[in-house]
Image (cartoon, rainbow, N blue to C red):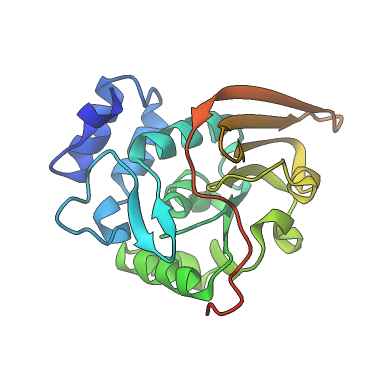
Length: 226
C-alpha cells in the first residue's frame, strides 16, 4: 500500500500517508508537512516518492512511511522539551521532523552519524530547510561518532530512533534511555525486525517485536572514509 502514497508535493505525500492509515496523528502529519523532503534527497526530480533513496556513502534516506511509523511510535515521548537521539541521522530529515515535535519549547534532538561527510550533508540540508537557527541554538545537535555508543553527553533521552539495523540491541542505547523512555530500532542481519524498547519509570525494560523491515546495517566508519 505504501507505494500508493507517492505525491507531487510534500503536502500531498503526507496527505496520502494519512489517507492510507500510515499516519494517524495530526501532530505527526503537521511536523512532516513542515519539513520539505525535497531538501533532504539527492534525487530532486522524485523527492516525494514513498520509497528509500540513496544519499551516497552506502546510506539511504528511509521511505516516508517508515519515518511516519517511527514518529508515531515515539510520539508518546515526544513532548515539548524532550530530549531525543536520532542514530543514523543520514540526510537529516527525521532529525528535523523530531525537532518540530519537541523543539519549540526547549527540546533537543541529537543526530549522530559515523561519517563526517554525512554529518556535513545533514547540516547543509537542515539549514536549507530553514532550521539554521535551531542548529545555531543547539536545539538540533549534530555529531560524528559510533551510533551504537549513543551520545551520553546530552542524555538521558526520552526517545531514541535508530535508522540502521544493529546486529543486537546496543546496551549503551538502552542505558541512555530515560525512565520512562522508548527506543525504536531495527535489529538483525539477513532477517530484520523493527523492535520497540520501553524503559519504565522504575527502569524496567520491555521489548516488543513490531514487524519485518529492511535497513542498511549500523556499521563502523570505514578506515579510509572522511
